[in-house]
Image (cartoon, rainbow, N blue to C red):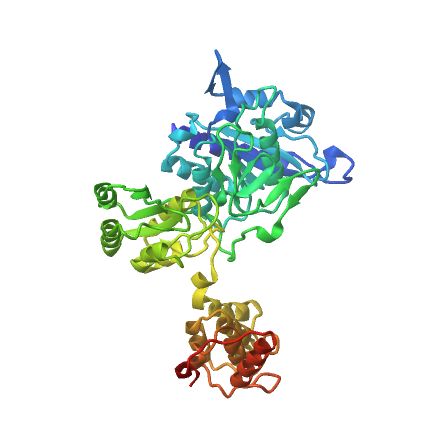
Length: 523
């Protein structure tokens, strides 16, 4: 059956090329709807409530029903336009009517999967199938829409976001709580919105569109099983909102940073699991879960990534699994917030090698683990590093996680500016690294201070707020970082660190503050 679908898609694409040559739509006036340039969108219908039909009061999918009913809904199909421009096409597309303020008319084609799936039945193979179909049709369309059931939609969105490497076009996943053919339905609005975004906006991400919000796919969760606002992105604002005008947050869009061609990574590791911690859970359950062939675990912990510190048996079981090569990522059971290793109950996991998952959703963490473990060309340490790296905008990377990688921007800037001489690169170092140095002093990062010191940078050049790193250190952190620098360096006020420290003491004293130090500390 899958081969038949492949043949159908190949036939579909061949006829699309024919349509591209036959249809002429040179724009002349924005006021003439027929003169609008066309945006071509491929819509993959995998199943779900959006295309279901009621039989004796029970909704169920029916092959051929959704493509037929969409022909009869004017907001989803401009029949006159299709008959005029695609009358001789072997595979007639659909067309949205012209949309106010949009510069392109969306023409779309629907490929219905066989069999239609309830999203509860979606598997890794179905994710690969969707990604592969998009790859095959990638160069013939401006964007893609995937119609999907809502129950596992967030898993599919997360998986596709990682599988699709160097994505340069929008892939919008949507569905509905009520079938599109019902008089009162969210399906029509969701489909129209997804098609408009896919055809008119430069948002090269896998996204979820639902209830007038466009959300990053790997940040999305299903929040409600009965409301029309079924999905949300708790740790990130939507990429776009449908209001009177479409408001797009372009600064938040995650774009590929290289020029490599689009490709699909379809080797997903299946030996991955979600382990949810709960009070008084048995050690036998934990040990059984961590046994081979398990290679990756998403650990769902309390609050900010906390674990019962008195459960040494569970800690030891996790430690043993990590020692034999199992990768473990710590994610919070809370919908909002992120893992924080500053708590003792969270740091105990970090100390044994559990990877902090920041604010990733469980769906995104699971999909990312499958993707990373499926990268056979990466060694174990590279996989650990990638799980902590923001690959597709799925996580917020803290300053601590960035660490000394801040320094790696220098060669990239030099490359972008086409700098070739050592003097030019050194000038960039002298300009950029001193502020980084001062920030490292301010935020108490001695490892970065030591690394920058080894780069032969003149730290007396630009300062932050006219302060040298020494001044920053004594102003914000005291003397615990003083070993990283020579105390003779002076800022633009000709003050060294000791003078700055003394000035701060005078200021505090003028504010009626006082220090509680014994003679030993003062000496």
